[in-house]
Amino acid sequence: MKILYGVQGTGNGHITRARCLAREFDRLGLEVDYVFSGRDKNKYFGMEVFGDARFFEGLTFETRNNKIDHLSTIKNLRPFRFVHELKQIHLDSYDLVISDFEPLTAWRSRFSKTPSLGIGHQYSFISGAPWPKHDVVGRLVLRYFAPVQRALGVHWHHFDGTVLPPLIDVRLKWKPSEEAFVLVYLPFANSESALEILLNLPSVAFKFYSPQHKERRQVENVTIEPLSKEGFRQDLRQCRALVSSCGFGLVSEALHMGIPILTIPVQGQGEQIANAMALEQLGLGESNAHLNSQTLSEFMERIDSTTGGTRSPMNYPDVASAVADYCASGAHTDPKTLVDRLWQSTSAA
Image (cartoon, rainbow, N blue to C red; front, side, top):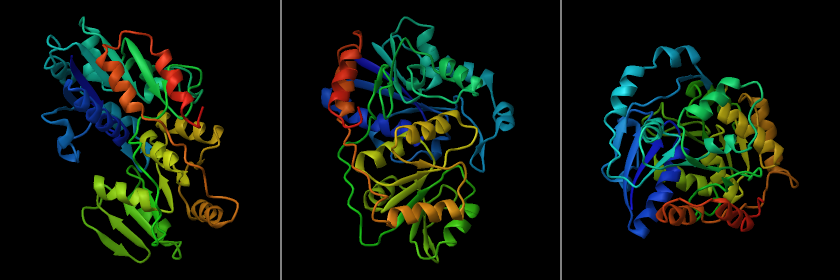
């Protein structure tokens, strides 16, 4: 079995899922090649598990101040470049193409005889997960951005569709440290504006990870950290709470461990707005359209109260292992049995 696995690089959640599956593919002895697109090659980190991966420009969305910048997105579209990259991907030697909402591998498989399987959060929205009603363009993007023959969505609920529990590293355990700090990760926000808000709560210790800062430094009650996969994961396990954008992967890890969470979805990004909707509909966490001092202060008050702020861990099952086994079998059969079995072993069903 030889697999080509395409990963959308614009969000770390896609890469986290790929890391989990890569370990399981290695366990099974499968031959897997990886393709990443949507981010500059030098902006990836912790990619050793993927071996000699290939990196492409692909398609992506431009953001500014925690909002999708539609004008910049349109201006920076390079369709001829996309077609050129598409021609560089050859599928003759592969038995299966997997796409985590990665358009190059998905579209290449559409024009070939190689079977394709979508594994990712975006595929849950075409299988029943809630989506903003007004976002018609977003629905079209979901359907045509990275089309596949068969899809396995991942989400915090099955929504009576072909949707798996979150595919995360189930070894993660929450052990809050004595530092009692709040972890902040808002990669698309203006870091200086966010820092100003954090400084307005001097009694709270924050660790603020930002791609806009390259060195660690202390500013009063805020420790600013440069991006680091291992450093961030350690701080996630030890924080007292999490404030982040509403990306699916990170929120899923927090829910798995039972960490209190406040999300600030990227405005204009349908997926993040949909995630915030689901988070509140399912009673799993809080969200707010904008980060401000009042919202943050009220969140901290609920955490500090005797009745709020704590949550039982979701303890999601080992989805990666089960999905890897399914792929190793050729992914030819209806995955409904797999979906039902995994939800039966989680408290989120």
